[in-house]
Image 1 (cartoon, rainbow, N blue to C red):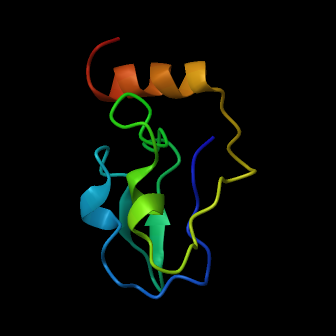
Image 2: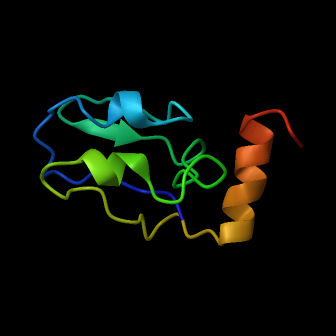
Length: 83
């Protein structure tokens, strides 16, 4: 399941550089996560790094992009050229 940034985001800029897949970018009002690139850090880390650094806890799982651990690993492999 990809993650999503809610409107509680304070645009503190700490999440974007932590994303190993470059899935986070500035949106019109708050940062946004590209669900096509978000693997919840599967393949890179044990936990989503953006969630770890977020000071306001505004990065939950995106219910519109449900994926299993295996699907996230496949996405990771495609994004890193291992598939």
